[in-house]
Image 1 (cartoon, rainbow, N blue to C red):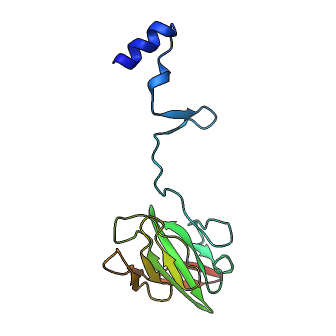
Image 2: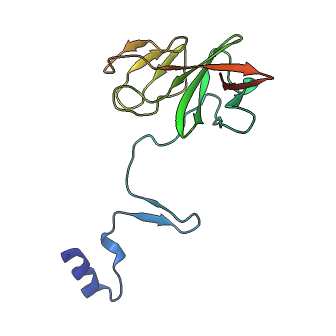
Image 3: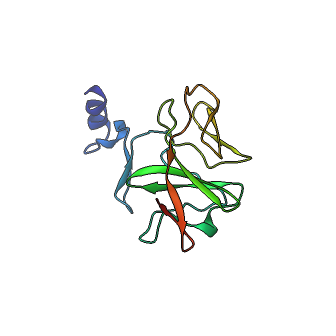
Length: 147
């Protein structure tokens, strides 16, 4: 209240100086100052996306690595070792932050450093107290799809 009054007294007609929300007029989106991990991390710089053909093309899932995709509005981490592709729920069991794509056989949560095995989702290091939940997927005609 006082902030708005002070701005109104100094800048006639100006009320935006005390807002914590900024907007981007080109997109119509706002930034409320939340600095949490809201995007998807990937290996190789591209974000996988669930399309009509599947979760991702097999060729887009790096051998020995993986990427983050979305299915049904929820993030999944896809991992690949040779011809074997697995998927795990990408929400860290500790506080729900989306984990990063696997690097060196480890999936890491960017918030508090929990680590999980890329081949089985098992807990390697806390503060999480359990591993990632496996989600059944298969490869069909060069696409990773829900099983």
